[in-house]
Length: 487
Image 1 (cartoon, rainbow, N blue to C red):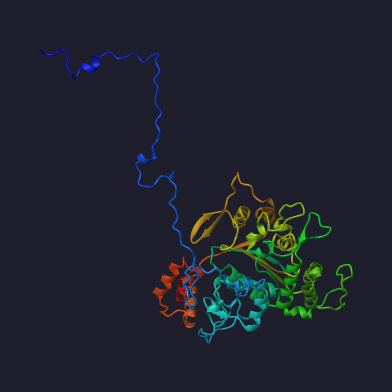
Image 2 (image 1 turned 135 degrees about the vertical axis):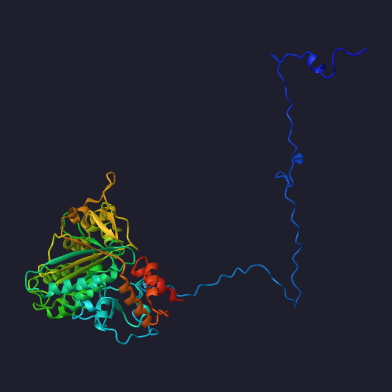
């Protein structure tokens, strides 16, 4: 007889006991490490015993044993440690001549007569040996400018150089009242701002002007020179005796005509704490301050006062690296442990007083500052001030670009903005761009005659290199042409 209930449905028909009110007890199980699915030994197992090396037996007499272990003997470093300042001197070493370069025989020298000759546009003029010594004294040469690639240093006469030479000649030969020209050089990296400053220094030296140059502002603000508060100064100002002594040495070396100028009146004992002659020359006075940093500040103020006295020659003030002078802080700290502002350093405060127009040059002259794009901090206040000085709109590489506008929610350094008075001061902005194709051709021909370019300087070659250099940017042109020849 067939079952009425299917075997497959039988489990569903069996009543199950209710789990409500009952507790189910689980038996704890122990984990057996041996049952783990792993090919690595368990961490709970003890490490295998090390093999015994056996008793150490002394080697027999007459036999040598081979020791393969590492030698514990330390090798002494017998190399000479560099002396203090030796690395910096090597990094900033200036090489101005290459004995292996081909000398350009018919190259003219930069002279007083041809500083604004329009026929020399696009040509390279050489610097004479006395002029090179003066420029080296004011540290006008830079290690990155490639002076050591050629037989002798030379500079390109571009249209901006000739315009500057014309202005220097007019200021020197004019019989009317002397005027003060304030100018800031701006431009992209490698556009020739530092070389333009060197050319301006050269023209001033050729015309017999007194030249004072601050070659690198970073050396003043980085915190590597001794400093001290200036007595009886409110607000507090700080002097740098060692840097002032070096600056006085630069002034006495780079300006030979100071050996013929005497002080207008004998300095009193209260002005200088040492006795000096009543007819001492300015060169001798600057040398005294250079030899003793303790009195360098007093002598520096006296030398500047004598240079601005009536009847003195015009003065050229140069500065490179303007952004470092506009930072909110420096590497120096005040007695209250707050960082010192760059404008509280007496050297920069003295220079910025002439650049901003607070102080004037009675005998005329030029106050020139160059910005840097390769080694410069970001200073938004300086960008805004330069934009206001340059105008609402400016032309860069043939395109109209709006000026640097103020951001409403950004805090700007008011001391920097006050230096330029929102664009009301008479400071000219000169933007250096790339060379023209004619100027680039003259520079390439000079390089070819010096042996640095082996190809023929044709119209196609000039156009190719001019395009690769971003429209004739001097630094990029040198890198694209001369830099490829260096091994």
